[in-house]
Length: 69
Length: 172
Image 1 (cartoon, each protein chain N blue to C red):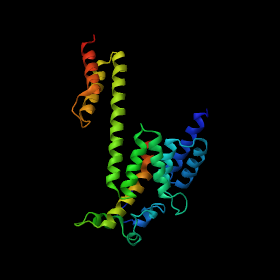
Image 2 (cartoon, rainbow over the protein chains, first blue to last red):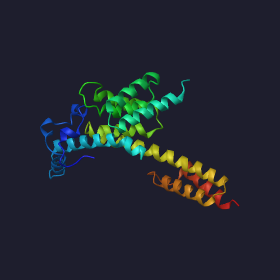
Image 3 (cartoon, each protein chain N blue to C red):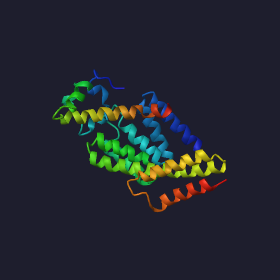
Image 4 (cartoon, helix red, strand yellow):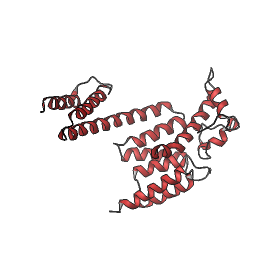
């Protein structure tokens, strides 16, 4: 489970950092900051993409745990 | 034909490594299994999922992961798993909600159809076991699913459910 005070770079695996949705300049922002920026008006496009990468990594990591529970 | 036991053991090993967070080992095991069962849709989906969890920037590319989902969806047109995986990939990795939505649409339609068929078959089995209320409940769910299919509740599937309901209602 991603915590709001974790850095994006610690939550996005190296492989997903090769995606066009990854923005290295947002790597040292926390998940909490990214969520706030992504939900802002207007939303921050880079934050929105980074948030989706974080959530994709979380979903895949938890996929097998969910299956076994 | 190869024994399914070694396939099952291999997949169980993949899942154990995955749950332990050892994604590199899980991927290595999928690669090993793919040598024996190339083009297996279940393995292709596991492979595409695991590629995205690798810490190293070397190794298979995200384009290859996408291609594996697409191949799995093409090989097993009846399974929603690959479409779901591809939908999430398009949404998150390629920031393509339109493409993702098309995949999820297809996955929903397939899942609904599979569930409807299973409910109809279960109703038949329960009726034979003289568990009529449960059989009726299954048919009611199947009817509801059909009605939620985005179409007017008509056509052969709808007629089949109604026919089964009628049979059950009149059965002793």
